[in-house]
Length: 464
Figure 1 (tube, one colour):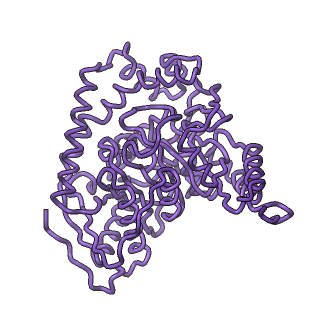
Figure 2 (cartoon, rainbow, N blue to C red):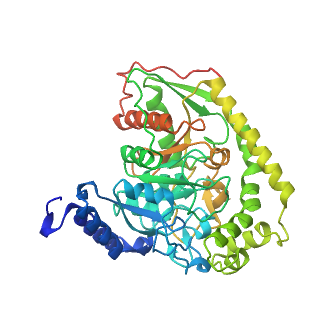
Figure 3 (cartoon, rainbow, N blue to C red):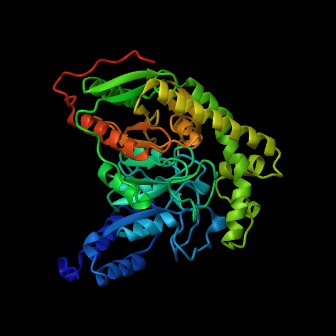
């Protein structure tokens, strides 16, 4: 049995008490939909009885991932009364590794948005600056991690819903390869594109979370191993907000002076594939997937009822018109089959890019812009002198790899007087542990700031 902590409390109890105190201090962020003080305290006591209280750490779980005994609203009124009886496998795996679930986090309604401006549970404030939005759809988890309430968190990612809020809150996030994490016990949006994903304030903890869920570990890169990093020629590095551009250019300069080969790569065709596949997969899969989920878990409501009860007008309108089979803009099974075929072509294009270029990862800013003020930019935001759509702009760099089912890691970039900016690294499908090792090397080089190679870096390569 672990000895008592401060004021007679065990380490596990101390961890929960500190997390709850911090949650109260940042309650204005609206990071949590359900804060489970009683359950977290009971879980800490169970750790103590088993003698593993020193392994304690606190976890926040997005409110579309099942936690036994806690409501699973998916951020929407139509599911507010649904309480799962069992944990999602991904939650069970982390609990077995010592996690204490502090509560369920706020999110963009039904995970279909990028700001986490939830009209039912309140807009989620940014953990780095509460006046800004947290990004989405996993904004509550990102804010809870970034503000220091919890050690780590779980989100879900369909087109960037882990990477976007991780970048905007200045923390680390992993979207795993398709199928790497179990998807049972997660409210679906698109069965092809959805993936649970972890967030943390350090890359070491992020890698540990991945190992806890998958049981897989990987050795670090040898210190003398030269990295080859792909620099996109098209789209991903264009039309960036000034603060993002400055952080991106500084990062590329530092990496270029390190023992790193920077390889220009063509990516325009990947964006074109995504335009033909991404949203068609979501809209084509949503109704059938949610129907199965609601029936399996005996929620007592149908998909149309859940959509009709949606509080976000933009979410309700999109789903009602384009995702329900009775909707006037529903494209039907043929469009879904076309999107699936397009995704296969996209996966082949990504595989070819990695094989021909020999890069370990493709780099880009995670999001082209920084977080913007709460409540003001749900539909559009200013970028370089014009108004652009918020959703399409924020998912621009994250959606293609997510559609293809590739792993991506977001690393916070060093910034000077700017809101947080994230660097995205995309790796080959199934290469998650190798990508985490690459991210660790890149992160170390950027944090050192001296190039890590004593000034004897490798110049940018022109190899295609």
